Image (tube, rainbow, N blue to C red; front, side, top):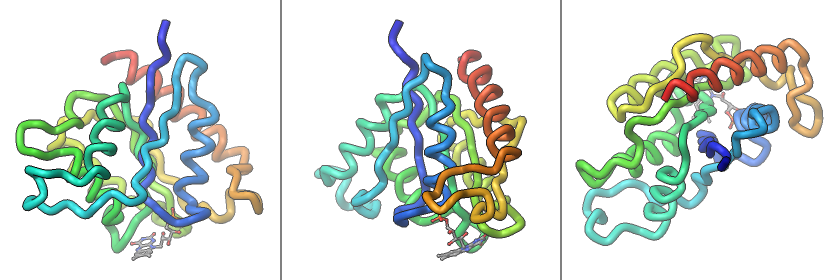
Length: 182
Ligand SMILES: Cc1cc2nc3c(=O)[nH]c(=O)nc-3n(C[C@H](O)[C@H](O)[C@H](O)COP(=O)(O)O)c2cc1C
């Protein structure tokens, strides 16, 4: 049986991004019949409706990557209490041309990540608002807010805090059940 493909979407381009660290850990604990596909947001041109008739190669590549997966796991940092522009751009590029969105109908998970104590709550919920319009279905419970993230990693950027590992393992178990429902 072919493996379920999980598109891992990380809303940071930063080398050594905390959100990437958490995504890497979650990808490493996915069930054996799941395959993680990291969706690369580097170099995705800014959305501009004028280009829709002749889309940049970066848009086509992103749309193909997004289409090829069965479910999404979003890892979002928080920028000014919302999602980073790089993530919003990817959501917008995937949603157009009108009537040809690549996003709809798939299950998802949302994990917000921040060195701050509020754990990206604003980004987590702004992302959910966009996902509802794009007809993506995020797991509602449990939620995943990873705060003070810099204290949970080792010097190589690996998630080593045991409570966080357990929390993310429980999240993945719930995500697996959610995906099976679709
Ligand atoms: C433009 C900008 C806005 C930010 N706004 C917030 C914020 O609203 N809440 C927060 O917790 N952290 C905020 N931060 C700090 C980020 O949480 C921090 O830079 C974090 O490392 C970004 O995630 P990453 O490591 O995955 O790139 C902001 C950072 C930037 C660059």
